[in-house]
Length: 331
Image 1 (cartoon, rainbow, N blue to C red):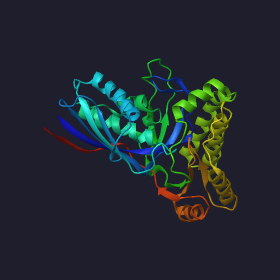
Image 2: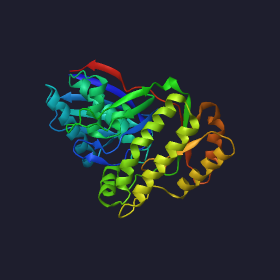
Image 3: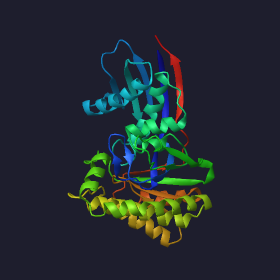
Image 4: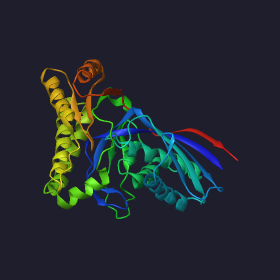
């Protein structure tokens, strides 16, 4: 038996992913571009044990809920199918940031689980296959296999084998800082998967959202290549607000923001109008991510911390690839 511990970082999308064309395979309806975050990460240790009769998940020091354990077990079944290891697993996982609060905890969690469990089961998968595997747990997890600037392909094949992420540039390409204004640490009421499906079924903005995505992808990719901050800011805020307009126009409406979220968006735009290069993006949750060149991070952080309703501000640079932290034989 092997015990493997892995680490994977969270990511935030600059061009958003919302909607699935195939739910069982987690195939996205649109492509996306993200940045991986250095200081928001998951660490997961996996051990397949012939003595266990069921998979066990310990999450942030406590026995996980039946729902979370079943989701993990279903994912581990995929690894058991690919490997010769049919045993149940003991899994310990820790997030160093709020879970299910709009900070992509599922992305880092399933990227980490794919790497740790795959290695513990005896699989030695290339990153492209790890990305495909991680996507089956969470769509955005495919991106957390890679560091820096990452593109998630929409793919064309029915089996999803070409629906994988790849790195556009490593983190050293552009020294950016992400300031995350935490406006609530409560678990969101509607998860991303359920929200996406509701939007697909009921929102009149869903089809325009799909058709407008390729232009956003092309413009963002070129802006990152050129390090054109103003263009990145324009496309990122446009994609973010389109995604939330789509969610708001779902029936019943999906309101992931709170009052402080809205105040923070206005404040970021005021900072930019006053000469500070900074823009916002928001995922399916109330947290506001302000992105700026590293040399402006101090003043942006100070401004956000002074905003009423902001609980705290997390500062992070861009992160690297998912990695194995420890691997050893046991038993």
